[in-house]
Image 1 (cartoon, rainbow, N blue to C red):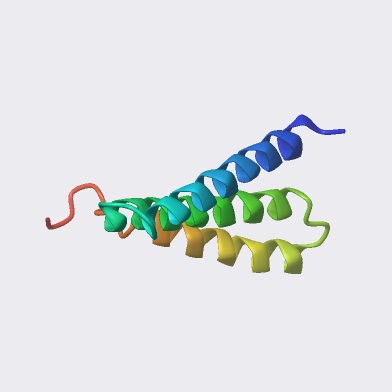
Image 2: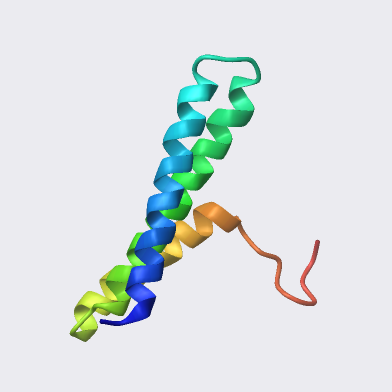
Length: 89
């Protein structure tokens, strides 16, 4: 077995655990916006990791392109729009 999918699935499981924990805390305690936003960010990170796993397992170019679009989507949501070097700020 390859070690990369195993490590990615462990990271995705940790992200899901942290997501569930922070969403439950956010809906019951003080500072709910902080916990809820962190829970949503970890959910996005979990989606990004899972799509990376699927991208590693793609067998043909069509599947790879489809999964790559999802990787770009989750990366854009998680990182936001980046300024290019030398661009306007």
